[in-house]
Image 1: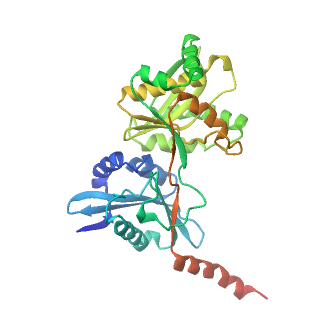
Image 2: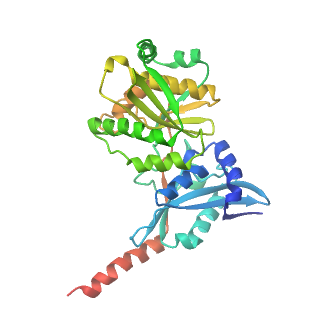
Image 3: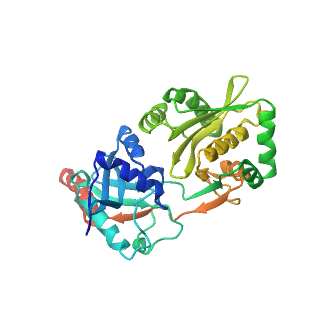
Length: 337
């Protein structure tokens, strides 16, 4: 007999082993990521599907308490269920009921789920598509392996530029030291300014670097004669290294520092036994208005396969949504002239 229960610290190792091996999971279902989100002000609700003493599924759900009358519970990269099993729909309904019944989620009017699946499973059929995804719906993943195989998969320009950068003296180094946030954030902030995108505050990266275990979060820097020209932050989870954030300065473009940066990340990840490098956010050609378009043309030069997932789906508690609406409307009616 299976049942959902709140997970405790003693369950952390078993949960992380499950999340690392689950085919539809990602790093946002790791225990370390939930600790990071708590530092960011979210409430992490950790539910496990337990059968006897065995943990066989569950979800890490994130809730940001706010002044609104209704809250949203988000489950990025999850839930972790056996989506092909006959009991998947029952397990999913039980999970939603368990979340709804938690005192911490009493104001939750919506649960947004997004397992990493290419096809909508029967258990989620009929749920409305969310207006906003929790993680990129489309990405591009590179197969990691021997240098020769990775080079062969790259487009000629990327292969040439990566080698050229190294010949011209670009050096790539790696660090898991949280103090590296300062060097990384300077490059990231400058990139955001000249490419016109919003940049997370430095505290975001400090919290992340201090929350995850050594080796899970790593900074990479491409330098030339001591000057940092490009930087990246990668996360390792399961068999995947994910390029989460990064950028490069608009200086010395002829050095091709950004190519050397990603090539060395690929080599280092492969040597660590990882199987994939997820460039985290990609759209194919022909969508010039998409915010990922300008980055995608660079990313696709490294080869790899485009991946398209189902995106977010919403479970709406309509009774709670109605109660929240009435709570807003009623006071205004009482004060109307």
